[in-house]
Amino acid sequence: MSKTKVALITGITGQDGSYLAELLLEKGYEVHGIKRRSSSLNTERVDHIYQDIHEQDKRFFLHYGDLTDSSNLTRIIKNVQPDEVYNLGAQSHVAVSFECPEYTADVDAMGTLRLLEAIRFLGLEKQTKFYQASTSELYGQVQEIPQKETTPFHPRSPYAVAKMYAYWIVVNYRESYGMYACNGILFNHESPRRGETFVTRKITRGISNISQGLEKCLYLGNMDALRDWGHAKDYVRMQWMMLQQEQAEDFVIATGKQISVREFVTLSAIEAGIELEFSGNGTQEVGTIKSIVGHDAPALSIGDVIVRVDPRYFRPAEVATLVGDSSKAKEKLGWESQITVEQLCAEMVQHDLSKAKQQALLKAHGHEVSIAIDNRG
Ligand code: NDP
Ligand code: GDR
Image 1 (cartoon, helix red, strand yellow):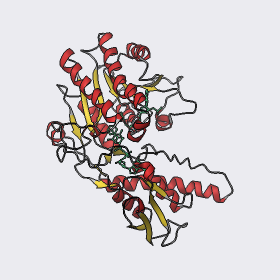
Image 2 (cartoon, helix red, strand yellow):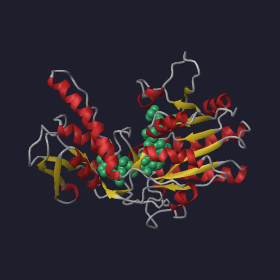
Image 3 (spheres, protein in one colour):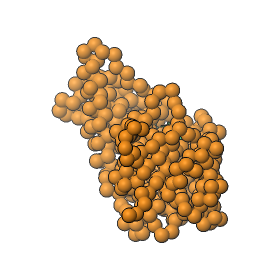
Image 4 (cartoon, rainbow, N blue to C red):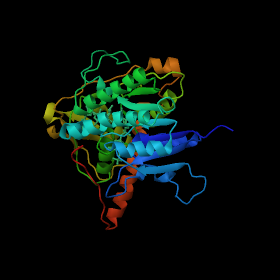
């Protein structure tokens, strides 16, 4: 009988962590995750796979921990003895990294080093495989279109600079100690579980809430930014595949197609039954309702302005355009993204619309509803 594989996931409470945990459980793994202590519950994305500590044959375990705490990481790795470590934990918001650069470096750069050192210190460097959540943000000011594994890096934020350290320390531990350690250079990937302050989710929630009369206007930053958006489910499959090879290698993971933030707004609005028209330039740009299709937007009228630019969402240095070439992943691993940006957007809007409708119904019956609009996103 083959031994049950054991995985440890940092960032298990995040978007990717939750999808990866599901995938590994399906594959028969014992899955351990590190979660941060917080004053309110932060396990919403994994609650559906949580197993009570009293259950028999338990294969899903959560441990309190933090990437800033080396002794805690070393103790968890010693106890868990993982075959595979997936380092997905990070302060992952680019705009926030300009406000908290030191913390971002501590978690995203030093946190990666702490994990690698813990594995080495415990003598597990020939046993434990390591996956690092690297990012297309490394390309920043792009040197080549599309970006691939050999494209030079030019990071444009404290987040990207911290992730660049993490990228190279992973390469260094592979070269120095023969560790199976690799970087997945992932382009943006989204889902209904995406954090509410990343632009796609901010848009799909905003449009849904507006269509149901829960919000008035969606305020955005740079609408010209171009991104290569894929689905998180497709991308976590690749994270696992990268650790199942003979030799550790780094891979770019992307769809190969880019659209602008404005186009993502347009797609989302159409999915909610609203046709928008954009006018004005720069900070004066607005999105106005041109027509309403069906009955999904009861709170709106033609001519309403529901999208505006707010310069507070501009970043000190912006990444204008990203689009990836994942031919290497296709050739070597047979991986290709399967979900288009149109399908992704439709799934996110339908998810947020159904939530917005529930909230609107509660409101109509006199209940208090909390929209939790984080205007720092
Ligand atoms: P999320 O922001 O959804 O999740 C981040 C996770 O990291 C959360 O579980 C969070 O915990 C945890 N975390 C934050 N700070 C710490 C800390 N100090 N110690 C331990 N855990 C911490 O990110 P995604 O799931 O979207 O992304 C996963 C990884 O992939 C990240 O490293 C991100 O930088 C990287 N990445 C993401 C891409 C994307 O488009 N999604 C693209 C390329 C790379 P909590 O829930 O408590 O906040
Ligand atoms: P990004 O994602 O910075 O690419 O990082 P985000 O969704 O935050 O921004 C994408 C682009 O949209 C522009 N934008 C806005 N962004 C936000 N958040 N809010 C707004 O109101 C807004 N208006 C316009 C941004 O300027 C940017 O150009 C994500 C994260 O998941 C990282 O962890 C990951 O490494 C990269 O993707 C790949």
